[in-house]
Image (cartoon, rainbow, N blue to C red; front, side, top):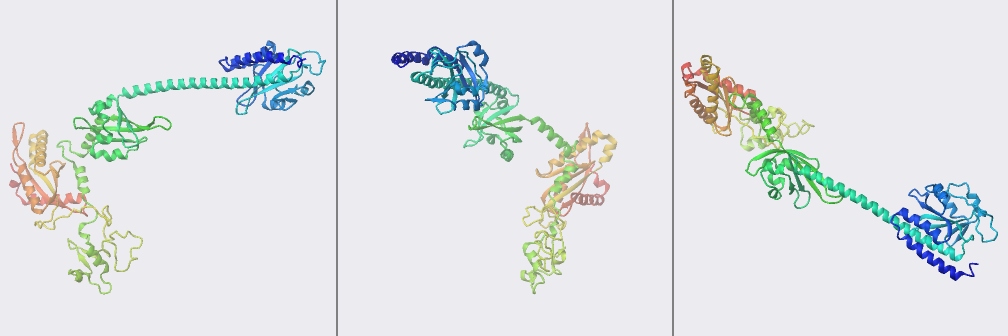
Length: 591
């Protein structure tokens, strides 16, 4: 009996338990640990068969290791039993201090469930505590948090009897140590997988960094990495060789700058408006020699880590050649191909930029507008109050046109003597009598172009338009050919350009007609300029060793707001023909 030899049984069992538990800690992998668990039960705890059912991630239990019978091992290893069937088994039978014993008298109902099981043959027991072939004994294994790790199944004790108190305690202690060993093996396996994954990620990162470095360093166009955010936002951290060559500066010097330090002053607004994320801009960057180069900037944000600092990756492409071609095309479209002067379209564009559609003559002062608005109300006499002269309910403008109630029904600011509802819904700052234009409004920053009232210089300065027609050019062209005629036109263009100020415009309308725009001149100034230009044209022009001479007739017109560019040019053209007819043919042609 076990009770009679209990001290000896305990000592032998402890020795075996110590040895098999020590074996658990020598296994390296999870599979080795599981096999060591079942082998320890067969070798050290006195059972002929042992099996470990391990909980899978989906909750079901799989037969992970088997020991004691190769045929049974091949039959059930790897098979799966549902979690529900196992929970049913772990609540049946007798609870032996954490172990679960299901005697054959109750276990017959489990023959048809989905838990993998084996059948052993043997005679029916003759004693009360003798082991029956259909008895079942399970030792659940739990993790430190209380969740089920798996279940150890044992069968056929070698002594043929159900385990006593000490044998049960030994199996329970072994299951506890096995749970620790399995948890540690899983932890080691997870750590190994994590290390392998980390190593692969690091290798991929190193490969990616090397690929980025090579793409960055050896890119044919400029590349830069700049700080993003903080006090040093935009400071260049790294530049490639292509950008250094483009800007003529070494990388060590470029690290002292940001793009805002290098950009052309006129392009700083373009740079600041460029979005950091996916932004693109075309601007000029300064070279070491003081010149500027046109580039295209494209920005993208690169994060160093998930929550780490962010950097600005900028691609810098040299577009100097394209910009040069664009400027050449624009210049060809707006300039005469022979003389290089602005052509007719460019002349009209420059002239139209100075003109608005509201005539200056109908614009009233603030006091005149108030006088016009309140005139006729309760005997109010604004003219008398200001010492002005009466003009039939209004005021005479600079050119004698009435301004006020009769001129347009309201002053400049929309007041009307008939009441505030006269122009209900209209712009309160719109002058009803004036054509609409971009300069309309109370905050009109447009500087209106004013024409002198007469040909007598009264001190008024305006935009003079000098229409020039060459005299005697047709005969030169017919006599000596177009080559000589072209050379004469080129020289006349040069003399006209030399004779005007830097801000003035000399344009060629076509044929032998030129126009000069000179701002800020009075009537006498314009007449003097016409004389100087005529005298500059008169001297002989040498072409292919031959001296030819042309004269010039000038007509002086004045640009004024309310006129179109064509009207201004037509007025100057008419004055030119008047001046041409007033001079004899001999005087028109200088030589």
